[in-house]
Each structure stands twice: as C-alpha cells, then as structure tokens.
Image 1 (spheres, rainbow, N blue to C red):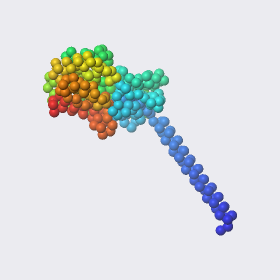
Image 2: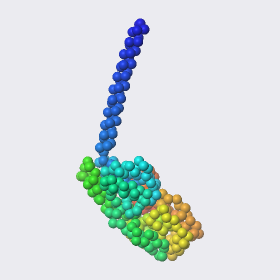
Image 3: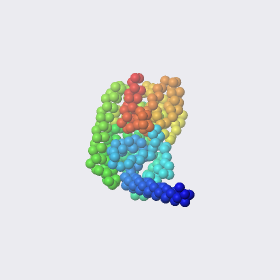
Image 4: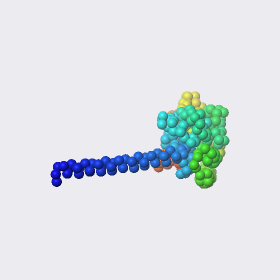
Length: 325
C-alpha cells in the first residue's frame, strides 16, 4: 500500500471516529437533559427533622421526592443547614417542620422560605401542643407555660399530624395523586393505632407507683400525659439541650428523686451522657442510666431508623428500666 493511500485511510478513520464521538456526545447530552427535566418536574417536599421525614415519606410514597435536612443521630435543637440546604428550602413545593421552637437554628430559613412564597406546615403546632409545667414532687421547673415541641412522643398526636400532612401535600404539591396520598396516610394511621395499643399493653407491666420519669431534658411530657406517667424532672431543666443545669438545679432534682424513690434516668442517645453521669455521682452511684432514642432516628440498622421502631425501642427500654428487667 502506498503512503498516500495509508494517509487517506487514516483520514477516513479519524473522520469516522469523530462522527462516532459527536453522536455519543449528542446521546449523553440528550440523556442528561432528559434526566434534568425529569428531576425538575418531580415535586419536592423538604422536611426539617428526620422523625417527621420518616412520617412524611410514609404518606407520600412514590408521589414526590422527600428531602430530609436533619441527619441521623443529630440533635434537632442544634443542627444547622448548609447553603445548599437553605436553598433547597426556598425551592421546595412544601416545607414540613416541627415548629414550637424545636429547630432553633433552622427556623429562620423556614421563615425565609415562607416569605418567598413556599407553603410551610408546622406539624407540632397543629397536633394539639401541651405546655411545659412544673415537675411533680417539687422537682425543678421546666420553661413554665412555654409550648412543648416534643409532640411525637405521643403516637396519637402523630396520627393526627399524619392526616394533616396528607392534606397539605394534596393542597400544595402539584402532580401527586390524592387518592394514593390518602390511602398511604390511612394505612400508616392504622400502624400508629396498633403502636398505641402495643405501648399501652407494654406500660401495663410497670406498677402505677413507679411510673416516674427523669430524663436528660424535658422531652417526654406528651408520653407522660398520654400513658399516665409522672415527670419528676430533668437533669437539664429545660425543653432544649442547649441549656445547662446549675448546681441548685441538680440539688433540687436529686432531692425530688429521693422523695419519689426514683433511681433511673433516661438519657437521649444523641446527647453525651455526662450530665446523667454527674447525677449518678450526686446520688452515690445508685442511679441507673438508660439510653433512649427520643429526638432523632438512627442510621439504617441502628435500632431506631423509623418512627415506629424508635417508639417500640424506647417503650421496651422504659419498661425494662422501670421494672428492673
């Protein structure tokens, strides 16, 4: 073969390769554009806490994307947002948040989203909030008269919130099938009804006189109200983990525990146990510290990675902790 013929064949080959590359590039561009269009067309619901995120996903199913801002094992009182997450709030079709002052570092972003025209829904405010009240047996006061944001410790209130979230999704999120949303919400409500019945049966194992709670901070007021517990007090006499106890707070709490003959403290798994351990020291080492998942879900496989599993795990731990099992 002549050198000229070889060059011509090489030119043809290069031209053919360029043609193939252009075609592949066009395919990739088209696929990317299609994907972007599909993603842009999918409605997006942004939820602040992972507990409400799990509940919302049960309601929404495959009808929309649900973006949860709070990571597993985080503290809802102190977690913050990245710039990207803050932008996601303002681009959402609906924002579901707890409200009642829970997400202390996030609420300004929720307010900004609302002001920009995004529909927002405060589940805690709609679920029949309780207020903090003075602890039983002369224990330390919580934030007297202030709304308690921890409504999810009562599954009946979560069932009420489930129906309300479904209403919000149907009203504000275009493109979802209302019948599917209703069916999902009804199914989940039945699971919550079963959870309540199971918790009642489990708590029946605890003698009435020993249904007394001491926690890391005031978090179980709704559970106490629903299932007949006394709240003796909290190591942090506040509804937020961002507060700190004084020496007089600890002294008041230990005195209340002595009067009520309580020797079990329930500490949230998302917080260090240092304060509960301090209380153990104050009472001569005669305090049992039991870990609960009260304010955050765990990562998948962590034992409390859904709301239903979290409540069952907590109920079992509380029963065991108060019966000496």
